[in-house]
Image 1 (tube, one colour):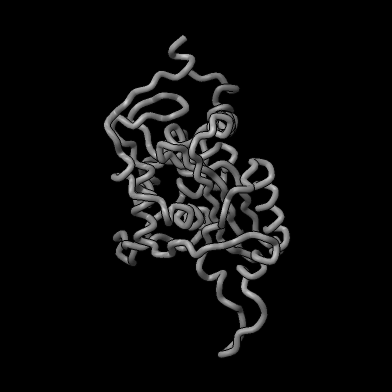
Image 2 (image 1 turned 180 degrees about the vertical axis):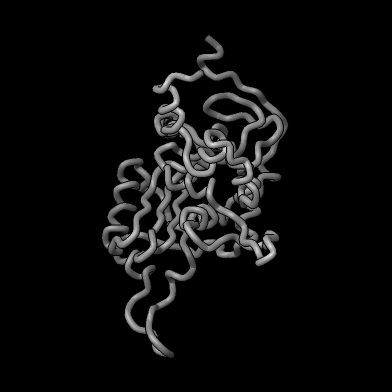
Length: 263
């Protein structure tokens, strides 16, 4: 009963596993997802609304924490993400880069471009895969410079992120689960999560909806995610390395009316 143009709009709005589930009716495709709580309806917001909220915070002098994460890749895609944390502890993933077969100097250029665009000159360091601090070589010898050394030469300071898979998944899951009485700072909707993704970051959305646990030969789920197309998932894990558990952020409900609601 739907018009063809409306169907096309739906097909353009849903991606990955969300498309399989809500448009194609493949409900079983959600079994075994690492982050089943992720929802495009809840966690994805327009890039415009997030950037406007960011500008409002900057203009008001609010306490903002910048977040940057990086997962190295050459033959496989590298991933860089930048974002911020507001004074309520909400994490916003704002922008980034994701591409394979890109030389390291172009990856560094992308980081600088994002920093300049969002005026993140006060960002202290990028939380990275610990592997970039090792010098690459063959056999027992190590030669050349590490990736972190290359970043440092261009004025980009890097710090080791949390590489523990289980711990990282638990932390990300905490931020994804909607919390009772927590309010979305942009829309004012209650029972909101603590992490939001710009709709500009389609690669992040696709990985969230396609990140599965491994299965043994019998088909039983193992306590280890599939090591494929997970570069954004690793990057987010690094970004949250030093963020507190959500349990420490939860405070008694203090509803605040947004401007349009007061009107």
